[in-house]
Image 1 (cartoon, helix red, strand yellow):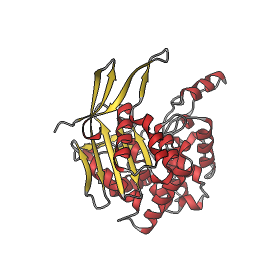
Image 2 (cartoon, rainbow, N blue to C red):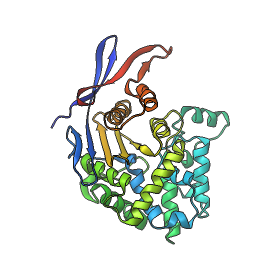
Image 3 (cartoon, rainbow, N blue to C red):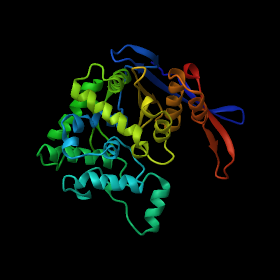
Length: 334
């Protein structure tokens, strides 16, 4: 099945590029409210399901036992830009179990937020694993291991007891694969599990509504949503779609990006979950697709409607700052 064109780049009055993709919007029972393209084909949701991966940290009681703040919970589900507050919060999380950067197994890369990377260079410092966009998630895994009196070393391996808990939670929420060809390795070295977009969307409907979840998991999901809405900067960072959308909508929208053009969301008041993927892995198109789903389904106030407009027609500029084109929605999302 060929996925439809869902986004276009227009330059000089002509369509220069087209992005195909698939979108699934589900209720907690798995009934599809919206389905564009092949929503049953397994995809790797990557970092878009970090909220599912964080559920064991909260439902086990580890987060309460260690006195986690909302800021630390928000960072545990983040794909952050490596800005100072992100790094400081990751350090705080690790310190709660007597650990430091040496325990992180996510690898090292410079801050993805350019200004933070430049500041590091000016200070004569090198990036560490704390600047990895997944350091908050990994700090959460380490804290879960220590709270359960387990050695966190090797926690990135599928055979580690903590990673088995994490993978099990993702499987239960989305129907994700637990072993075999549908399990790959993510950029931060943990297993990434394939799942159909329809299953992931159903999982986010349950994550946002609490329906069909046990009481501990429902409370954990609600706390994650609350923490993200209270401090969306920690979930992503400066000039990021996730930060800006959750700052605009608060607890009405939980949204999370993943690599290779994946985006997921929960609309708690509607009981809907969203999972989408841009076929070519383009973030510019997946962000536009998510903005389009929000505009299509979520009742908007006048202020929200106006604030959402720039996300529905993102401007493309050249190196001189001149507007040279715009992205626009296409097909059923237009």
